[in-house]
Length: 168
Image 1: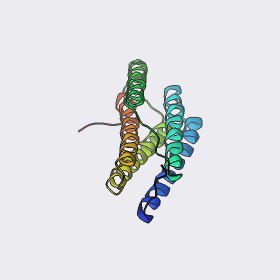
Image 2: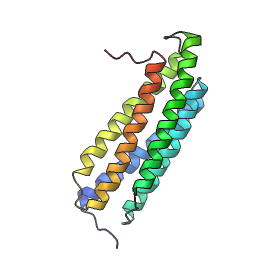
Image 3: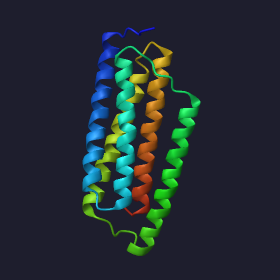
Image 4: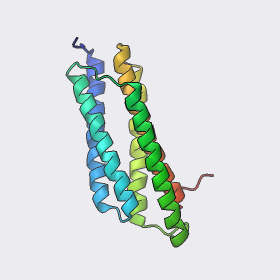
C-alpha cells in the first residue's frame, strides 16, 4: 500500500529530508576537522545514523513505510549506550590527563554547533509527528526523533566530560 500525503505532510517530509542531509554534511565535515580522535569517531558514527534517517525519509516520500520494529530500536539503544560508555570512559581518561578544561576551542565550537543542530532537528520531528494522519508514519518519525535525542545525549555527555558544558 502506498501512502498519499497531504500537501502539509509532504512539505514536512521534504523539510525533514533537508535537515537530515544537512546533519550528514555537518557531521562528515566536522569529523574531518575535529582534533580529538574520540570526537572524530562520534561524528563519523552519527553521520552514518543520519544517513539511515535520510534513507528512511526518502522511503516515506515514496509512499512506503519502513518497519521500525523493537529489535531495531533495542539494537540502536544498545549501540548508543555502548558508544556512550566507551566515549565517557575514554573521555574521563583524557580528562584526568588533560585537566577538566583543557580542550580545543575548535572542538568546542563544532560540538556546540552539532548539539544545537540536534536540538532543532528533534524539535522539528516533534512538531511533524503531530501533523501526520497515518499512525505508522508517526511511529517511524517518533523512532527517528528518539534517535536524534540519543545523538544529543552523546554530544552532551562528551561535552560535560571534557569540561565544555557546565550544568548549573
